[in-house]
Image 1 (cartoon, helix red, strand yellow):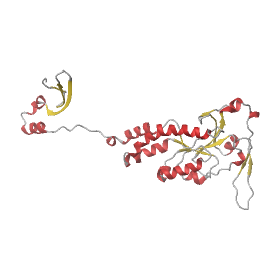
Image 2 (spheres, rainbow, N blue to C red; image 1 turned 180 degrees about the vertical axis):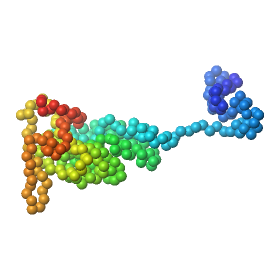
Image 3 (cartoon, helix red, strand yellow; image 1 turned 60 degrees about the vertical axis):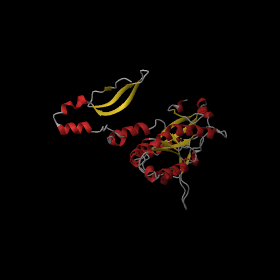
Length: 290
């Protein structure tokens, strides 16, 4: 075996190269000080002894030792997803297996992309507390199906009241129970209400949401197959909005020309969206002109 060759220009020689009988280089850690690096301390016995017998203490940088702004930047890269997180997708298919196929598609996306990233939250309580506000506050959570409001309540019970209060952007079916459901989300900023185009408008209650800072938008959902049809060939929609009932009062009825007119009267946003065969959405602003 050849004589070890010490490499490294620092004070501490951390690596030495060894050659076996075949000439192959073997790397192994070394924990001795180089004599050349100790030479300047020969005239100072105390310093020389401290340097000679000191043990290696390499610098270790942990994730929690990083400044908070660096950790937040990492959280944003890790927990913010480009696509909305859909828990109960709305299927445009009328067959028995249609909703199941859409659900399977969204489930694969969740279990392959989102769930593995959430394991980071279980690292420790500090990381969970810091990263939860980014995961729940910066992503778009959707409960678009007919029973979306019930799933949203179950979701809130699962994540807890503190995490539910962090939600900023959610999507629910327009026929949900009303203000009590929305108020439970805490400091909500954006609320999208899904209205499938085959739903009769008269079945939808007038929503009284007393949250002035909440940005509300109606997402009017059309089927992909309707793009080749003119207005006369599309399913008819009733235009009556029935208000909430109360005892000893008559039902309040308001007339609107369209869903867009209803949204305008409520000072809400309005989007028309095309839903593909497997639940994929595409905004189509010029749908009325087709």
